[in-house]
Length: 563
Ligand code: GLU
Figure 1 (cartoon, rainbow, N blue to C red):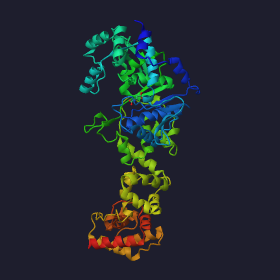
Figure 2 (figure 1 turned 90 degrees about the horizontal axis):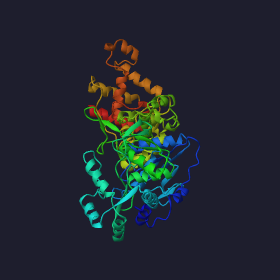
Figure 3 (figure 1 turned 90 degrees about the vertical axis):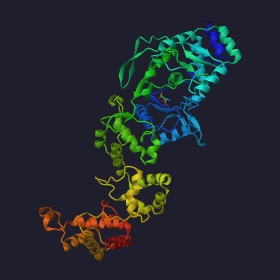
Figure 4 (figure 1 turned 120 degrees about the vertical axis):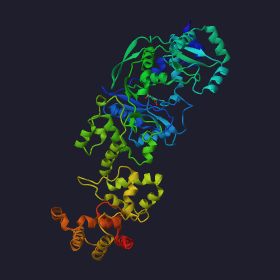
C-alpha cells in the first residue's frame, strides 16, 4: 500500500508538516526541575470536588517548582458540552485560587480567549493541528481509515447516540470477535478509499495497534509506583467521523506540544495508559509523568466506602457555594487529605497560606480520599475565626445577597452593627469559632435583629417561673446601659446573693446543697430572655450591641410571658 498516497487522499487540505507545527511550540525555557502541569476539564457541567482536588495538585507541583500551570479546555465532545460551562469553570477555578500562568481565560468582553504562547487552549480550535499528526501517522502506516456511508452514519447516530462508527467498547468477552472484525477493517485497497472519498463518505481514523494483549508493559505512576498493564492491542479511534480527535489523540498531541511534564488526572484514565504509551511511541513524543488521582469517596449508611455520586451533597462545587463554604476553607481541607503531614504543619504555622506548605506527591495516598464534612467544618471554623470582622462581612454579604436577600438587606442596612456583632470574641489566642459556613451566620446573628429574633422559653430546668421572673425583675431594677463589664457582672452576682444563689462558684462547688443554684443560672435566665437561646456570645457585649431599649423590652416581654 502506498501510505503517502493514502494520507494525501484522506487529508488533501493538510499542507503543514509536523516540523512546521513543532516550530510553533518550541521547548519551554524553564529552570531545571520545573514542572509544567495543566488542568484540562471538559465543559460538560459544573466543576466537581475531584476537579478542585486535581487542579490543586497541578497548581502546587507547578508553582513549587517555578514551573507553569495552564488551563486547557477539552471541548471535543460537542454533544455533551453544556453552553456556558467553560466560562463558569474558569470563574469557579479563580474563586478557588487557581492562578493559571497561561491557558483559556475570560477576556474583557466576557468571552473565552487565549492567554499564552502555547495555544490555542481550547481543543475545538486545534483541529488543524491534530490533522497534521493524523496525516503523518497514516503516511507511516500507523493509522488507517474505516469508512462508512453517510446513511449508515445517520442510522447509527439515530439508534445509538454515543455510537461512533463501529467504535465498540473493547471488553474481554467480545475481544476475539472484535479483534477479527478489527483485523478485517485493516484490509482495504486504495481504489476503495478513492471511491469513498469521491462519494464524500465519512471515515473514522484508527490507530494500527502493534501491541500484544497477552503481554504486559510497565508504566510508572507517581503515586501508585510501577504498574504492569496489558499492551494495547486495540485499534482505537484517533479521529471521529467529524474529524474531531478522541481524548487519547488530543491528549498525546496537546501535552507534547504544550510541554506538559506531569499529567495529573482521574484514575478512570488509568486503563487507557497503554493506549497512550502506544501513541506517544508512534508519534515519537517523550512520555510525561503520570499521577492518577483516586476517586473521592464517602461513607454510606453502613459505614462502607462508596464513590461520591452525582446525587450526593459535596460532589458539585455548586453545593459548596450555595452552602456558603469559603473556597479557601475547601482548599485547606483538600490539603489535609492530600498530605497526611499537613495538619501537623498547620499547627506549627497557623498564620501561613497553604501555599507555603512543602506539598509533595510522595506523601499522597493512592486509596480514595474520604469526604469528611465534620473535618471540613473544623477546618473552616478555624479559618473563619482568624479573619477580621471586616473580612467576614465582605465575604458574607455577597453570599447573602445571592442566597438570602432578606438577611443581606439587614446586613447592608447597618454595616457598623454587623461588624460589631462579628467582632465579638474575635482576635486573641482563642477566638470564637461560631461560623463554618456563611449559612451559619444568620442563625448566629439572628438574636441581634428584631426581624429574626425569636422568643424562647427554654430556661434551665429546676427553676420555677416565679424564680426566673423574679431574677429578671431584679435585673431590670438595677440595669444601667452605661455600666462597664465589671459593674454589670457585680450586679448579676448581687442578684444571685439576694436570691439565695451562690455568687462564688468555689463556694457553690463545696456545698451545692446550700444554694438554690449559682450565678451562672441567673446569667442563663437573662441570656434566654434577651437572646432567645441557651448559649450565646458574652452577654455584656451582646447587650451593648442590642442597646438599652431592646434589652429592657425583651426582658419585659419575657417577664410577661412567664406570669
Ligand atoms: N478532559 C479530561 C477529563 O475531564 C481530562 C483528563 C486529563 O486531565 O487528561 O476527564
